Amino acid sequence: MIALTPVLQAWLETLKTSVGIDHKLKGRDYSTFNMEIQNVYRAKVKELYSANRCNPRVSFLLPWVQIPLFITMSLTIRGMAGYPLPFLGESSLPVEPGFAEGGVLWFTDLAASDPMWIMPIAVGATNLLNVELNGLMMSKTPTRNQVIFRNFFRVLAVSMIPIAHEAPMAICLYWLSSGLYSVIQNGTFRIPVVRRGLKLPPLSKRDEDSGML
Image (cartoon, rainbow, N blue to C red):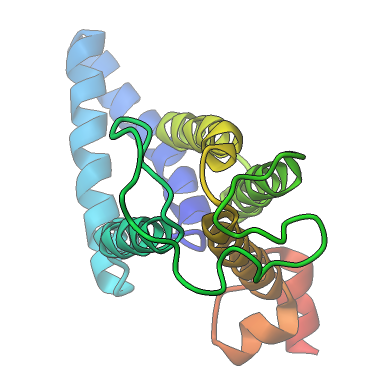
C-alpha cells in the first residue's frame, strides 16, 4: 500500500486534469465532476491493489484477531492477581502463589498497582512510540482518515496511563513487554537490510538506491 500510494496520487492529479477539461467543455457542474473523479479513482485503486496482490482488509483483520486474545490474557492475569474489576467491588479470587513477592525493584508485589506511576507511564510511552513509528511508515501526504486514526491512537496511548495505574503490576508487565516487542519490531522493519531480506519495499529513494549498489 505504501509503495502504491505515490503512483495513485500522481495518477489522481492527471485524472483531475483530464476529467476537468472534459467537464468544462460539456458544461457540467462541480458535484458531477467530483462524483466521477471518486468513482474512477476507486476503480483504479481496486485495479492496482488487485494487480499487486495487495488487500487492505487484511491489515484491518489482524488486529481484530489479536484483540480478543489481548483482553483474555489481561483478564486472566488480573484474576490470578486477585485484583477486582473497578465495577465489581471486592474480589473473592485468591492471589496465585508467587504474585505477592515475585516482583523486583520497586514492584515486589505483582498483585498491587504501581504506587510510583513508573510502569503505567512506561506503558503509555511505549504505546505512543509505536503509534509514531507506524506513522513514519505512512506516505508524506497522509489521507484525512489516516490523520484521524493516528490522532485517535495517540489519545488512546496516553489514556492507557491511568488505566494501567488501576491494574496490578502483573498486567502492566504484560502490556509493557508487548509494547516493547512492537517497538523493536517496528524499528527492525525500518532497517534497509532487513527490508531487503524480507522482500519489503524500500521506505525511501535513498534506501532503494543503496539496495541496487
